Amino acid sequence: MSEISLTQLNIWLDVAFTALYVVVVLGLTGHFVGNILTGRVRKRFVGKQWPHHEGPPVPFAPKFAHFTHVFSMFALAISGLYIRFPFFDSGRTAMRWVHYVFMIIVTVTVLWRLWYAFFARQRDWREFAVTREDIVTAPKVILYYIFVKSSKPHLGKYNVMQKMTYTIFVPLMLLQAYSGFALIAQPFIFGYSPRELLVGWWLGILVGSTDLAGWYARTLHYIITWLFIILTTVHAYLSMTEDFPAFKNFFGLGDGHEEHEGHEPHGAPAPAATAGEHS
Image (cartoon, rainbow, N blue to C red; front, side, top):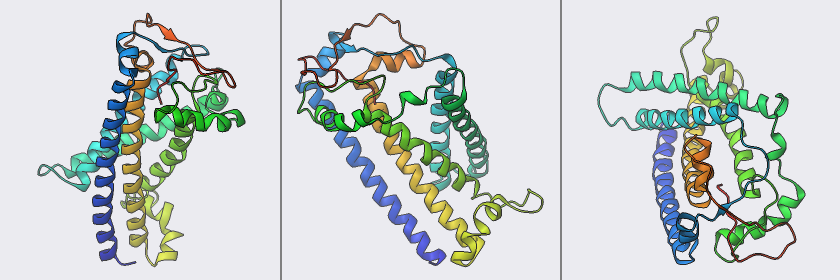
């Protein structure tokens, strides 16, 4: 594939993902209207009937990592989109530096969070593991989100949709970091560039040149960027509409006095009240 066709591919990606994002936003808007019509908004924001969370509170360290990650992802999204679509003059060099700095911060944060999840004293990987029971109850969770059921099964701290989302995020973030570092063409590592060390020696041979390998890495990086934008938008919407107190508490803004509604244990009859969690 030539550089010209890859440039055209990027244009197609711009159009496709922009259209997809508009569809997602319209879909979330429609979902919120559904929350209003079914009384879920009134029940949660007026009646203060929010879901109960099982398990101990989230420790400070993962909270801080999450806050750092969220802030860094916003900085990366803004700087990355500016690099792709410069909306003011003479800022591309500065934005590249911003992008590189926060790229390192996100990479370190993700690696630390993985270490914490599996090896720290308060390791919590089991809270995110998708179990057989999660798979069995997944259809009921989906039916809840599309307003067919008034409640959803509650098996632990996170429902199956949350667990799957967090599980997908990890390989995407690692792949995004890999492809991002592969875009750096300056030879500052013993005379080699990150592009040569990460993709040049294998992908460059397959496609014909290290520069063309860099184009593939950039295209992959751009696709994952849009996936993150879409997934984060859905995640933020569900966090604020399904469990706003937990959303506030995670960032240290909650007062801890919200009432909680009941939840539906696995295999139990569905109660009339909803049992949403942030997703």
